Amino acid sequence: MPQDLRNEILEKVKEFYKQELDTKQHTFEEGKNVVPFAGRVYDEDELVKLVDASLDFWLTAGRYAEEFERDFAKYMGTKFCLLTNSGSSANLLALTAFTSPKLGEKCLKPGDEVITVAAGFPTTINPIIQNGLIPVFVDVEIGTYNIKVDELEKAYSEKTKAVMIAHTLGNPFDLDAVMAFTKKHDLYLIEDCCDAVGSTYDGKMVGTFGHASTTSFYPAHHMTMGEGGAILVNNNLYKTLVQSFRDWGRDCFCEPGANDTCGRRFTMQFGSLPQGYDHKYVYSHIGYNLKITDMQAAVGVAQLKKLPGFVESRKKNFNIMHNGLKQFEEYLVLPYATKKSDPSWFGFPITVKVNDKFTKNQIVEYLENHKIMTRQLFAGNITRQPAFKDIKYRQVGTLENTDMIMNNTFFIGVYPGLTERKLNYVLRTFEDFFRGI
Ligand SMILES: Cc1ncc(COP(=O)(O)O)c(C=O)c1O
Image (cartoon, rainbow, N blue to C red; front, side, top):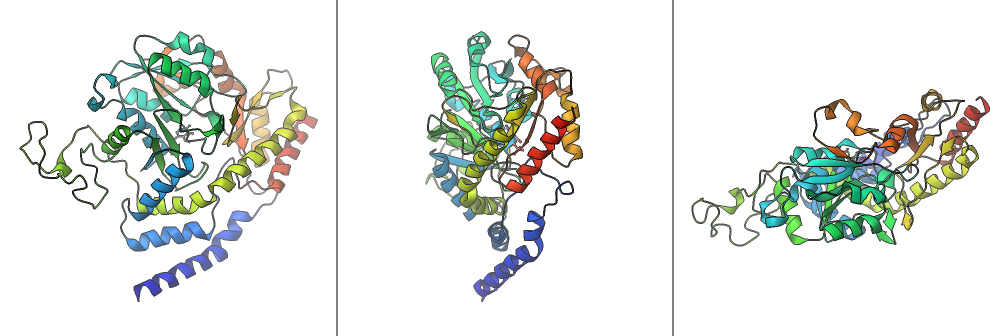
């Protein structure tokens, strides 16, 4: 019986996990094994779901994608979740949706401006450029690493049509101030929650405030599918627009393999196409194909069940790091949560205060030499990256904190794979470093 055979295979997969991957995942010897800044945390459930999906051999988005989209929307508190193949694609789709002519006067047009920050990840900003829009960079605060909200009005011009920013390293930006600004000027707000799944602001999940929000399921993130991402929206029209741009630009919104969901597949008139031209082949946008596979979604289904525990463990690990590093505040700026927020931290950012004892590079090198992984706050100041040499943008002021971040900030991990033993090793390594300065 095929079902029995499937069960037998899945039992073997569990056995494989226990014999091969379980110990690999949990081996740690101080100074020998790396303390990663992030990573996958999984067990046999993920492996079983992955193989189960592959045995279906449906390959494209299917039953697991449907289950994930329903359950993740519920977890995040939005009406819709649309899966895509990465957080970068999610950002591209979220912004591109607002360029749709179906929005009439409210559609974004080339030359319109989008307010963002230069201290961040490139693909929060790239979709602005990819759509012929102009990024306007505002400086950020040291400590929260989020946009300086008192500079929003200075960034505004007649051309401003949207704000697109990330909740940096899981720390929510000041949503009261940003929402007040976007409402006042009738702007779109896109929240990049790729590093902030599970963070709350005023008791409400981030990703539920803006017109659209995005998440990433790359292994470094709060939960993983390998590669993957999602767009979250509450509005039916925005959902259809994201779906259209994701699925080749088509007007039809049938799920893969389905037909005639609208019930009018051969009866409508579009552009100068013949009356009744198959709706499946009507294109209302210049779209992409950024869909996900069901194998990725299946891993996501297993991970989603672990997500609340992951979020708690990130918060706990952050507190352990914070308490342990407090003694070095003479030299280090430690991160703090934005007022009214409860972050599900992605990492633990540290800014080295200007001093005559050591530099950021020296402490980073010391940690790396002791097998503790460090990361930069992504692009540092993105306007200084080679790709931005000939890009048209505006900036407010000198972006001095953004430069400070580029020069003096790095982050280390707080992800759920960091056991107390690993965290204690990290703290002891900091102590050794400071003993030596
Ligand atoms: C804030 C932010 N946005 C977007 C992304 C892109 O996500 P992905 O790697 O899934 O494309 C990242 C990636 O790490 C990120 O940190």
